[in-house]
Amino acid sequence: MAARRNHQRNYILIVMKKNILFICVAFFIFSCGNKTPEKQIPSVPKWLAGEWVSQQDSIEFLEAWTFKNDSFLEGKGLAYKGTEILFSEDLAMKRVGDTLYYIPTVSDQNQGKAVWFKVTMIDSFGFMAENQAHDFPKTINYQLRGKDSVYAILKGVEGGESRTEIFPMKRR
Image (cartoon, rainbow, N blue to C red; front, side, top):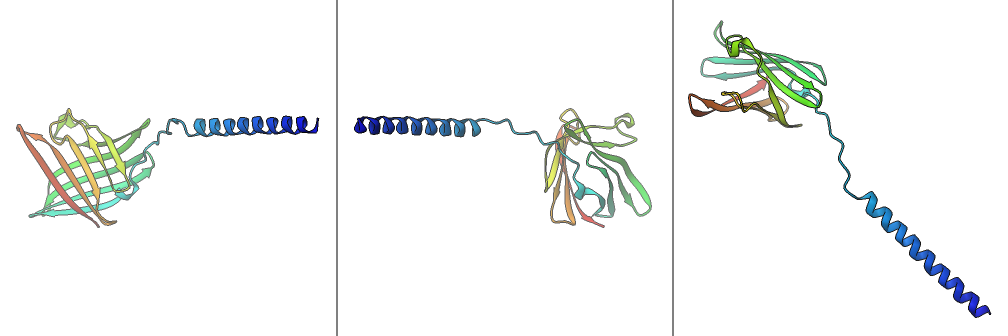
């Protein structure tokens, strides 16, 4: 009788251990399963705020950006030679919903309307904005090169030819 009770007790312990093992394995599998990652809503790059200058030949380029909030940066871009302004643009970086846009507006281009470039890549070292329907530029890429240096790289097509412009800028 005692041997029978020991055998039953051992059988119950084995079944309980198997059930506990099964529950632990099932929990592990379901907890490590395919989770949908939370979509991160991008913020405007705060490091862009401030004044940036570039000199190419006798032309000086200036971009001045003001951080408004996590969804909006406002800026102005100028190219000038001496006291003569050669080029002027209003700049914005704006989040609409879950999407970030780089938006330049040049008064004597595109009937003075803003051109929206969708930010397709952003991290702590820069961003890339694209508008494949636009001629030049199609892509605008800002690459942070240290805390006081940034490269603005514009690529596109002009007159049927591929064109790239690179503006190495320093913080002023």
